[in-house]
Length: 88
Image (tube, rainbow, N blue to C red; front, side, top):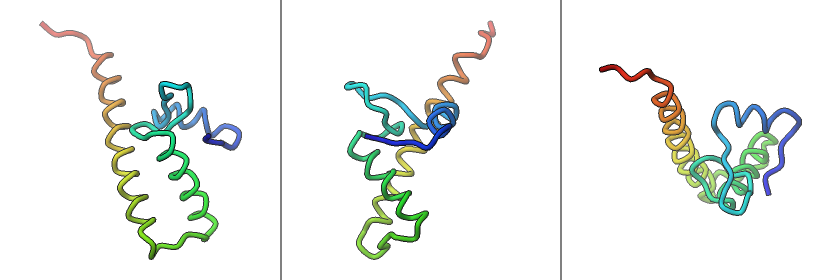
């Protein structure tokens, strides 16, 4: 399960970084629950300076980050396109 500091969930929703999976769990857009939990834990450990960057974790983080950002940008583009007036 993902856990957020006060205000963080609202911010992540605002920037289209969060979604809900089929079981009602918060997930990062483009990720499964398992990936989302790992990603969040990695980020928290990284901010504390507790990550081992030699065990392949950094590569996994970067791959998940790219996948997430691509999915997030697709959501933003879709929402942007749905608000454009139809030109004939």
